[in-house]
Length: 396
Image (cartoon, rainbow, N blue to C red; front, side, top):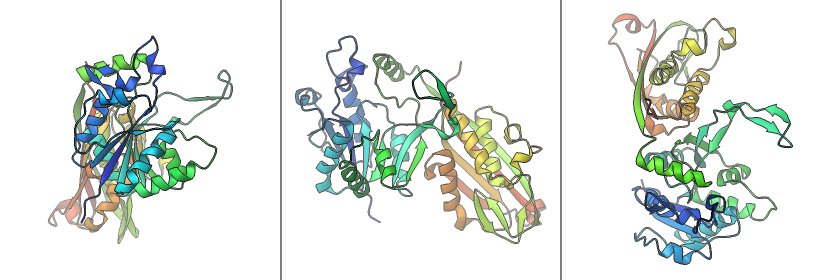
């Protein structure tokens, strides 16, 4: 199977006025963070990824000398093209320049985000096997108010449905190029490339963003960037485990890993009794010290009767994001004599990935039997065990 070709557009055509308050002589993308220009850091982050074929900077017409002074030299780094009067127009110029190369995928990155990690880039690329587009995002933790005049509150938004978008945003090249061309013919400015993709009817998925993947916008952001480079925002890894058991009762299907599997019985429980997602939810909650599933979703509470366990899993993932963390990997083992699990693993991975906003290659699902021994061997029910590895900001 041919490996997909991947190109990157680095959008660096802005003047960076907000970050230049106080008379900074250079636009923000050419200013230093720990002795290295922001744009150089951003470009290098993608050149360091082994899957990237070409990197194309889009710069301002007056920045040719500044860009040349970076002294970048790599055979995958294409000569810069001149951007347009808006970010949207600049991205379109980059897409036009890449069109003769016909890459399979394209990532679009703001020059002012110099801390995209190899893992984050890889997560965005991996999701493009399943969806038309992908972007990293972080759940909103503050309460969000809506106001029409900037003074009077008219509504409070459901923050569980709100996420802060980051870049790189990835797409199948032909689809996003077509969408951008169509968008350029209407009198509307879109806030990012994912919005253009959504407007064009493409399916865009989220992956877990990175709290350190900041966009340098204001002068104080340079101070935070310096702290990130120096390690003041170091992360630590925590591991949690989960274990759950559910008996069978009369029925015709079981829910496992968010997937309905036809079977001669169903699992008994207050919710949908998805033993795999219950164990996984407990593992994630354990990793961040947030108790267990019963604390957050009491079985005596009738609102959770028959509820889909993906609700519980997503809640655990949102708590990780709210703590400034990210899920590194998940591992689930299902123990049963039946039903057969292997053929359903890809679908389970897709459901879990969508609920948590992570790539499927961070999710392992395995199944085994107990060799006809004990509770599961007598086909009385199913056992699931899970572990979760989570990165969170280092505590004192």
